[in-house]
Image (cartoon, rainbow, N blue to C red; front, side, top):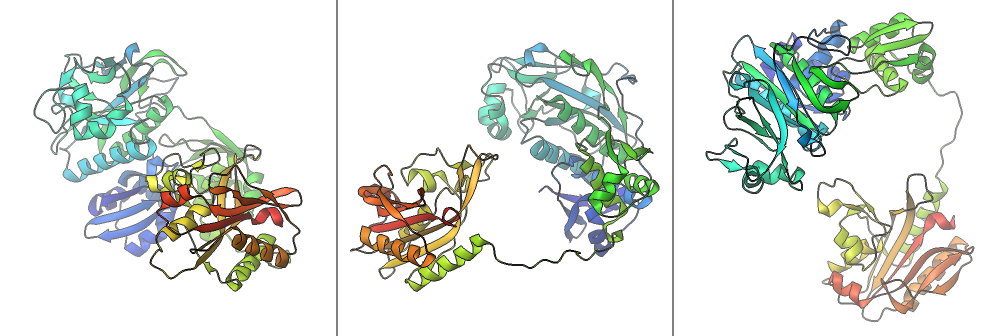
Length: 564
């Protein structure tokens, strides 16, 4: 979840009053936030909602809290609409068709401050820029945001795709001219973000009407126009990316934040290279959100408590949401900085928070129920007792691991493995498809321990299943292994026989010849009720070598859900 750090004095100034840490702890849930710490003059805030990027800044959190306490909805007069376009006074961004298919859109707005920008405000803007680009903009893939010195810009600003070897400028943090391709390979930001566009023949480029460079989005600003410093007053904010709605929303969030910090927001006309659902041009900041509806009856049904029309209206106003209520139907106008009302449940959630969770009366359950263990838990506990009685030691493993562990070292296909789309580390990129790799990992670390090694785990695995609605299925599974210099097929078979006897299950075995984890002819499938519920056998020497295991190992895996 996003975390932000805000200057204490600036935050309380935006909030309109000072609050103790205890008061902040009590009120932060209104903004779906928690107090993560308060060190000196720095307040650390953890945000608990990924679909509210408007809250990822000091201004956003302060706006939510002050609106909740006062019930007064903040009004912003600098937004254009489809019916009313504000005068941009010659400020324009022109998108060239050469950028289509690379990063299609660039939009922006200007801002001016009555007093020179302080260090606290500049740091807050930089933090907002980073959070929007990294979290909402998927590490700049869908949103790249740059802030520039507007005094040095001759409008209109031009956005196009250019030759990466011929186009050169002095990037921020450097003191020499570099081509766009050189920036990708030599500049720290180029190494970090250059891959986003490096596969294209031409790279995005932003310059003013004099030909002076603003930036190479989404990588780096220029060292001159793009180097905003303490003491500047006039700024130009630009956003580029492939999804227009995301860019417009991000620009609205930043414009509202800057307005709350004392900036005057100045509209900029954007001319697109192609027809969009908003036309060929818009003036940014631009209000594009649609209304959402729900019924008062739905509110009562979902929240379990009747609320009057007036209570619903006041609750929404405390969340900064305007509404009309007529004939049991609530119609809300989404705030300029939000676009998260996708269903009537989203409206009801805001009513719940705005009304105050402390105002809902607890209700005792009316139905009499008796708690009991599920059948899956019952069989799991029985299997654990049996394995412990047979001299096995229980283990507990992670459910996430690497491809090397679950696929490569087991010499199996990744056909059924479930991969994490954006893993934080390659060590946690796969949901385990089997318990056997975990058992072999323990064995690889235990050569110093006295033999025999008898270990087991009852846990979950996850595999792909095209017949399931989610495309995957999770199974409660038993895995056990035994290792010593004399262990063989019969040792595993005797344990399986004992388990099935005490579980009261009739079973038969079939030869296992096509599983690369086991020695051909030294493994078996376990069949219960005509269905394969597991397998066991002697682990193949190639697998043992991959794990660095020198002793023979027999192992078994049984899907407990399939034998209930």
